[in-house]
Image 1 (cartoon, helix red, strand yellow):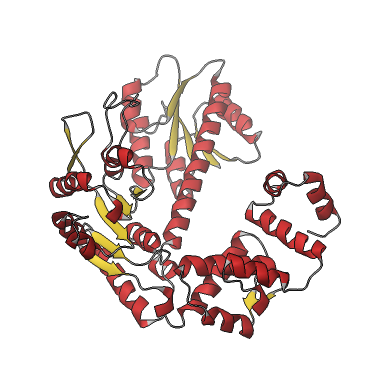
Image 2 (image 1 turned 60 degrees about the vertical axis):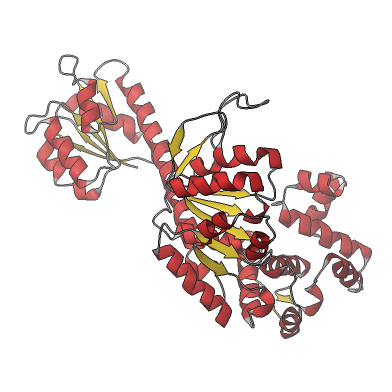
Length: 445
C-alpha cells in the first residue's frame, strides 16, 4: 500500500512517517507542501494523509485536485485543535476520515489505515470475482460448439444481448444448458452489474409460489412472521430467470402476466404497488403451445413471455460438438481440481461419439469428470468412459482390478469431489478417517 504524508510540521511528519514505516507492507513518501506533492499524483497513492493548514494551498483545493485525478485515493485530514474542519464539509469533500492532533493520533491513524487496507482488499476480491464471472460468461467461453444448430443459437443469443429489455424464452430438453444461456445473456447485457435471480417453478411448493415470486408482508398468512421480498423485486434493474415456467400454478399465471405488463408487483398481504424494472428470461422443457391448447397455460401469458424464442438443440443433434465440449469440460475440471491435465485417447473419443446422451450436455459433463477421476494417467482410455450408473458398475468391475485398487479409486474420487476434506469423505463413505490418512501417508492416495 502506497501512503503519501503531506504535513508542514517537521516533527509530526517524521512521527507519522516513522509509525507507518513499522509496517513493511507500506510504501511511504513525505512532503512539506502541496506543490511538491501534487506533481507526484501520477504515482497513484492509495492514501494521502493531509495537513489541513498548508501554507501554499488550501486543503479544500488540494482535495478537489486529488478527487479530479483519482477519486479512489482515500484522503485523511490531520488538523490542530483550533483548526478542525466541520464534519459536514469533510463529507462533502469526500474525505475518508479526519483527526485532531492529540495523544491518540498515531493509534487512531494506524487503525483507520488498517480499515482502508481491508476495504481495498475486499474491493480487489470483488473486482476479481466480477472479472472471473465476466470471462466465464463471455459468449465464446460459455457456449461451446461449431455445429450449424448451435451457431443458430449463438446468433440469437447475440440478438438477446443487444435488445436489452426484450423477454427471452428458452426451449429445450433437460440438460441442454438453458440456465447457462440465460446467465450468458445477462452477464453480457447492460444489466450485468445488477442481480441475476433464479427461481425454478418445479422446485417451489405450490402454496409458496406467490410469495416466492411477489413477496409478502408480515402477517399475510400463517407463518409470515416478517416481510419477504419476492424474486421479481429482488431482480429489479437486473434479470429474473424463471425455470420450468410451465409448472407455474394456473391461478397465479394472470398475476404474473399483469406484473410483466404493468411493470408493477403487489406483495401478498398488501395493496401497495411497487414498480419493478426486471428483465424476464424463462425456460421450459415442455411444449408450451401444447400446454396452451390443453388449458394448462394461459395464452395471454404465453405470448407475453414468448419474446425472443431460442430453441436449444439436444446434444445428439450437435454433430462433432461432443468432442469440443468434452475437451472443454475436461480442461476445466482438471484446473479446478488441481490435477494433471488429461486428454482422450482415440478409442475414448470414439466411445464418446457413439452415445446419444439422453441427459444432454449435463450428462456429458458428468461422464467426463468421472473419466478424469478414474484415469490415473494423462491419457483417458475407453474403459474410463462410463455412460450410466448401471453401466458404470459393470465397466468398473470389468476393469479386472484388485479390490484394494477399486477401493483406492473410490476414495480418491470422493477426496477430489470434496476438496480433500478427509473428515467429510470418511463420513460419506462410513469409514475411519485414520484409514484415509494412512493411505495418504503411504502414497496410495
